[in-house]
Length: 394
Image (cartoon, rainbow, N blue to C red; front, side, top):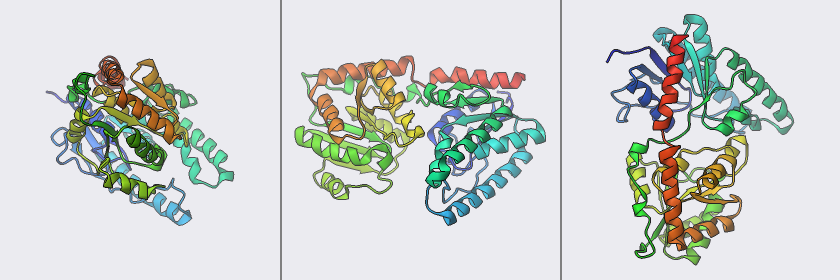
């Protein structure tokens, strides 16, 4: 196949094997483009191994948006400046036709590269970056938020295309100079050849009802409430078993309760596992968990990859009452929406699905149907190809 233009995917933070980055790069490479990954991490042993040119960058060891004092902030900013300089020098040497950045500093570097050699600039907005204002003292937060908005608006003026992960995120960024397009955070449906046959009927109840949480237990993702809910739900429905793929990140409020769940063999918690192992667990699970606390705009507008993986696997979902998750579960009748700050509400929803096989089956079938009709990567590929074609024609 004759290669089209070169496309550089750029990030000073996100590693090359990040799920969304992998899907984007795999898709663009399959379209015949010469794909360059300018990111930390390693592509060796991943699905990208033979598809891309990986230009590795140093990985940052600290992040300046966490409120850990000025020394940490200055050190982290210095790190990012160094990584940014390395990225820019490699960018000028390689001169790709299209540069796709996935955070503001990579976005800025792509615009500077445009001034040097005339590349097209795309930004893939995965976060609500004005939330970084929370890292500053309270009196400064409003001013910092406004400055971040002004900075991103200025960047958008010189940008050729903007990508959003959801309609809600697109609306949040309505202040930018152009609206952009939506390319959802959806999985490849082909990776989930699973209908709802694993959801037991009332005539053949499973020995255990497996409730799965794909991703680490983190405080901002309602992990403390979930741990309480696990204990409450297991007391009411002893056949429940919980699986966490991703380990524990951050300080939890109930370490003793967590240890008790381990000791009672009610909970299995695994560190980061490869994608095929995630699919294997989804195949044998019965209920998916997609919880998040509305602590800031990024979390309130969460459109997590795991939500759409549950749908593709045909799992009914217990999901947080935040805009995107609520819209998916209610509009497609594929799960139960709960108040994420309430462990009792989470436990009630889990028990309700565990006790009612017909409800699990119906919602699981609806989930798979939603994935087949809407929430799949295959439906996004045409949007991505159209975007790149339009950039080539300019």
